[in-house]
Length: 306
Image 1 (tube, rainbow, N blue to C red):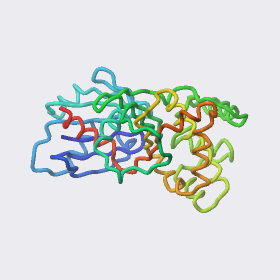
Image 2: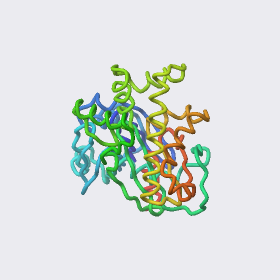
Image 3: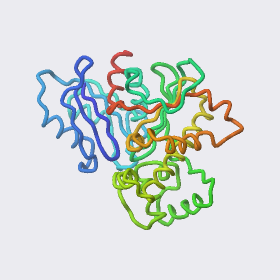
């Protein structure tokens, strides 16, 4: 089976044989005009001594009736067209957060970092929150039943004067006024530009923060508090007795900051913003997924579940 995790910035492709990944390669997604050209280049580059008959394609966008639109790329994807073009016998086209939720059953304890312990031993439901180029959310209701969503496009809820001003800034920049623009890789750059009138990449901003730069630290603190608030919002929406799991490029960029109490406290401050519901929010564990390719595991889960 061909495995593909197609994100707004990076795409990860590999071949699954048994339970192992082969020929894993990472590509800059925007270097290609469509998914077909990306798959074609990958299959041309790799060499395997067995036929690839199936494809698992997890894409950053909504999937409806075998078709998908990749929100931050403008790509249109059709599983039927790809099946004919590459002579696949079967294609599993899913939203990337759908794949993340399915693949989570193949993660081991070492693939998690606990940010907040829970007070329940129930396994489901589980919530997955993955801010990267965009912001994805899904819910694992049972072992193989997933509720995908486009929750990242819900309007951003401003609670402070500066956040209301940030909404006006987004409108001036002709950006969508939603959670995805406040809490994502692009959001990091937008917040920095909003405060300091300079557009830097998330990597540059996080590097500044690690060096003790106060501007960089301010943006990291904003991201952590907003991540806590969004996590809390999902906790109160779904009551995830199985826990809340954080993944995505932004979360991995923030991973080192969670090791410092002052930064972790920013996240927890956002999470416990609703003091009235604190007793309930304490029930749910919050964990960071540290596995580098958790979405690809969704293909393994699909085969296993069948």
